[in-house]
Amino acid sequence: MIYPEAFASLERVRWEMAKDVSWDSFVPELLTDEQAITIKMNAITEWAALPATEMFLRDFREDSDFSAFMSVWFYEEQKHALVLMEYLRRFRPEMVPTEEELHAVRFEFDPAPPMDTLMLHFCGEMRLTQWYRCAGQWHTEPVIKQIYGLLSGDEARHGGIYFKYMQRAIDRIGVSARASFAKVGVLMTSSARSSQALHPTNLHVNESLFPNDTVQSRLPDPAWLERWLDEQIHFDRTWENKVINTVLTKLANLFGVPIESTKDLNRYRKSLVAPLVTA
Image (cartoon, rainbow, N blue to C red; front, side):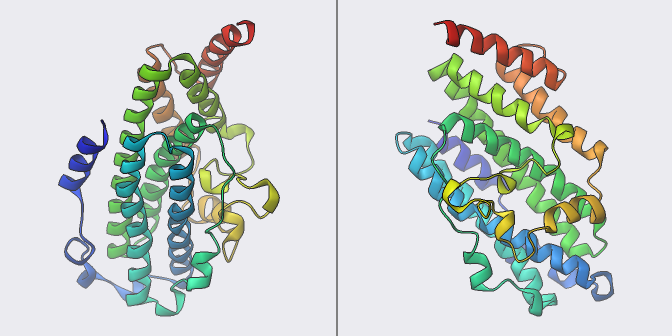
């Protein structure tokens, strides 16, 4: 089982909101209303770990090990929402999300192939790691800079544990797991072809609710994410390449083959799919 080791590794580095956030270092003049709004939107987005966890527990019902890990992942992701809300409660109380705004992002996700979902969320954690690092550099107020650093570290560790479950899936399932991971990997590293941010919170997940079936579409300002990335924190091609290179490097290690570009990954995907089609 992976869960006991994962629990222990996360427990060793877990930060406490009351003790490890330097609340007394707040500098009021370094926080603008514009910045506070972005913190609010990120808090609501993090709250969407709730429906994601419900999806994982449903679609991974036969995998008690992974489902147990969800207890830790869910706790830490909800703490991310909570620490951002606590920051606002202390320093911009009028910006704290309402319960209605939080509940709006809790909706049912349609069932999807579990291995696709696993890979999608691995990529999502790798992307959030870099988004939060970039956001931390954009902000000048020291407390929120520290908070984004804490969140970024958590997301990186979560991605590492998702990766362990991907390794286990290849050992157990073989080619079909590889095919799923390669397929989603091609999608999530093809940002140059997409007009939107490639992250689970920006993908359509409930056909009956379309087009209001993404987490971002249910925020108070659905256009916020693209504006945050492009105009505020300036998540540019250099940052995007960090995401892509991380995903490709991890997949090269996972598959045991050289993968230096999305084209390489797509060729590998096709090599896996062809035998499945002809079988």
